[in-house]
Length: 484
Image 1 (cartoon, rainbow, N blue to C red):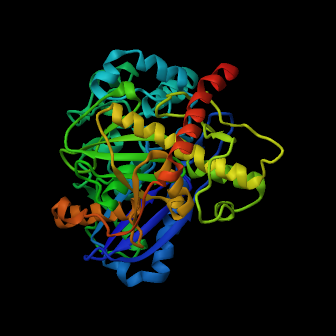
Image 2 (tube, rainbow, N blue to C red):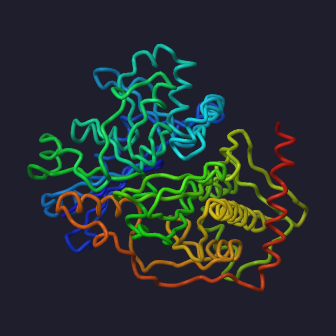
Image 3 (cartoon, rainbow, N blue to C red):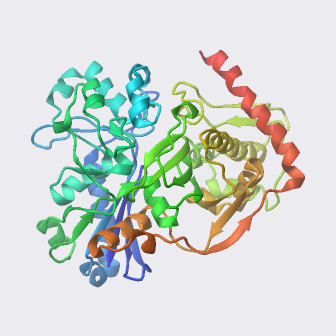
């Protein structure tokens, strides 16, 4: 048996698979995000541990015998979070999460240093780890001076599980401190934020062993001795391992809290000017590119809260057939935007409202707005040298056929829907746990699921969606002028 632990923004998922990669069972623990100020997004790392215990406890109740047979654990986690520890491993402040944009000034200052783009292959985005730590240095100097270790969220969980300070390439690539081409920490970039290698965890590949589960935790979870913990992956790379998106030309679109258009590469292809993320993959000698939008299902969840409806109810209200875009346009910039704007201060809007704009019309606009944001990502990937003809859909939003029809038509590419099953980050993490424990060939383990259906672009709507996209595209500079 092999266990995948996925530390997300809204919860921790524990997924158990057997040696044939069949899902045996799963458990969940919930998390909440604190937003004390505009642009801030934080969590208490102690809550990650509680949520992990809750998720595994659920598995213990339903699958104690199978849990006892676990040989390997893989970790997946939300990326970019700055978890600061003192010399006694005490957490010094709440972790600033991936969608925390308070460090936009520090990000701009670091990005102005040409060494960062040259060595990391990426813009220094406000959501990345290095500018967050620079913000702490500038605004909370006592905390910064007491910081002895900087860990990413899943790597803090690893420390609790194993006692080891370890990270892996895919997650480390999102810090702005990794030389992404060489797959190693850059002392030069660390020094630019007044840190050094002693502050950083050691690095392994995602398929390698990073440590062994502590005896007391193994006993509490009913496991045996010598349970290995794999390097694991950042959440998107873990999802790619779960989807089998590990080779050139393979891609997926993730409709989660945030949105990701992910393409695997066999070589390092940086193009920071496109605002595309170029990161290491979880497998050795493999990289990937991503277009990232900060609010995907989060946009519909926000609107659902306002309307006192569940997101699924809103989507169902639109019916099965794709509607022609109305004159209402939604910009999903609730937390700013990454690809292609790199703008932490921009905020969302509805445009074109009229008396006839009912709840369904605004739901449609939200869904189309997210689809058009993905089209921006598709264009950015093309500018970075990666052209896609089809993608596989993953994430909670992919359960909405209407949303997938809107995406396929807005992007003018086919969207494959995998056969029933859970092929997300927790499954990818479990696969990495299997690979590490058994020293298995990653390419034999990380295979793609069968395709259940393919949603093709609705060509009768192409011209109408093109016109709506251009209206969407032209609204950003107008909105920026008003909000500046």
